Amino acid sequence: MGQSKTKVDIIACGLDNSGKTTILNFFRPANEKMETVTATIGYNVETFQFQNFNYQTNAYNYKSAQNSGTGDKKVEFTAFDMGGAKKFRSLWESHYSTVQGIVFVIDSSDVLRLCVVKDELEALLQHPDLNADAGRKRVPVLVYANKNDLEGAKTPAELTELLDLPELMGDRPYNIFSSDARKGVALAEGMGWLQETVLLQLGDQKKKGK
Ligand SMILES: Nc1nc2c(ncn2[C@@H]2O[C@H](COP(=O)(O)OP(=O)(O)OP(=O)(O)O)[C@@H](O)[C@H]2O)c(=O)[nH]1
Ligand SMILES: [Mg+2]
Image (cartoon, rainbow, N blue to C red):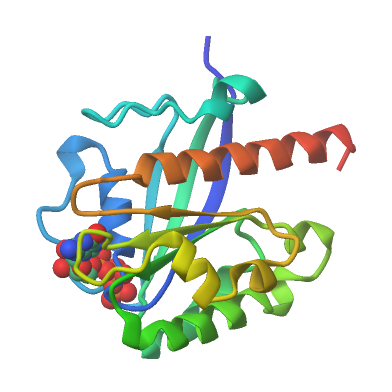
């Protein structure tokens, strides 16, 4: 008996070199992982399933999976891995009207470019396609405060303050995870949170008969 599959489209944004491709590579099956990642030209599309995540040591045990009763649903993610270099950032917006979740990756050690991070995040969050209606205003944002292994890396609390995240995010559900994408630290927890949040929203929409 096949489980029903929920398809969820997400977009990975953030400046070049922040770690987006490294993060999505982590979610590839073991035999499909890239040995080395290179800067993304334009964008790439990745699909992966995340249910009952147990790749090697990273057992998925995000608490609300059990509590919310959404943990047994099968989700297939289609992720748009966007190039973060300046010349590719104009491509991000073409996906805003269709995605159900946003992954925003920050190199927490790149303090010099935090003001650029803030500008780009603000432009993303204020984009008309992400504010067209109440549903779009609540598209959840998963923030990875990545490269937490590097010296001088800002903590999630520091980034929350420096970027003024509560103000920028408004009504959107958001969460920030301190990650080391090369080692896979906190990647599952973050994606688990996003999966749960999207599933709960889809459940609410169904209840309302949308
Ligand atoms: N030290 C450290 N290096 C990382 C981490 N995550 C990614 N990197 C490295 O950072 C570099 C850039 O990573 P990518 O995943 O290509 O970054 P990206 O955000 O996809 O960059 P663009 O495709 O240019 O937008 C690579 O050399 C990665 O190995 C991390 O958590 N810690
Ligand atoms: Mg990339």
